[in-house]
Amino acid sequence: MSTYKFILTGGGTGGHIYPAIAIADELKLRYPNAEFLFVGALDRMEMDKVPQAGYKIEGLWISGIQRKLTLRNLAFPLKLIVSLLRSKKIIKTFKPNVVIGTGGFASGPLLQMATLKKIPTLIQEQNSYPGITNKLLAKKVNTICVAYEGLEQFFPKQKIKITGNPIRKDLLEVKSKHIEGKDAFTLIHSKKTLLVLGGSLGARRINELIEANIDFFESQNIQVLWQCGKLYYNQYKHYNQLPNVQVHAFLSTMDLAYAAADVIISRAGAISVSELCIVGKPVIFIPSPNVAEDHQTKNAKSIADKNAAILIKEKDLDSQFQRVFAALFLDDEQQQQLSENIKNLALVNATNAIVNEVEKLLQIK
Image (tube, rainbow, N blue to C red):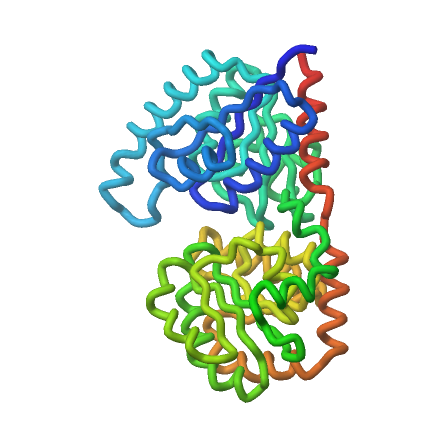
């Protein structure tokens, strides 16, 4: 059997990196002799996270265009030319059978050169509103794997495959881990648990909300498992002195944290949304308004419109949060309905489906 070679490219955020790693892991299971190379952006988190996952990575000197006029924007044309030449050399040296992109500006130059060289290409779009890199590449690549319906307005319809987003295998069954989860975090079994997630770095506005409502949660007899993010941990760690509050910089056993939760407050990044659909717990989404094209709000709205989650915008938190939260916690029927509806949106075989599409590209001569 011939040894296949795969390049995976993307990065800048965990939402681009972890799907690429999940795809590589599944390809490795199917083709143990395959060779893998990741291509990311120098100085971004993929340069650490990918080697930690056991894969080689090359870095490009590339960054996104800032929305306002900055000195960094002046360097963009030079960075792009250098990255295109570097990508051309990487492809010529490595000779990939397929190139897979998961979004982020690092994937642009590499996929551009791969399409010029007629190498089969696939991109995976995590969001309900695509990033600029994937929109630019859509006409040139062979296959586009998406997680949401309705992306024909951005991508050629005949190339789109609805697969879902790749997620961690340990999240596929959390319901049976409820007791284990509460024990792992030494939570009181008879109390309802609120899990608060703001991403690995944390979310300032969500942290402010939780701090402002510590007494409110106490009055509702709720215990709080609060991932505040590493940027904010020193600011909030003193709340660990309270009996019903746990503050963590980062939660490494996410399956047990999800399992312990009765209700979850979360940002609405694409991978978080996909994980929460699998987990199937009642969710209040508080999307970040500070992301490209406000795509977190679009992600959350696509779930909330199906009565599968609650969406509260940051600007409405002060006026709506306590009322909406208390009503949800007191209404077991609504909790059950939200759980069932969000679980119905889960695409549990996403990684397999994407790799099936990659296998089809291996047949292109």
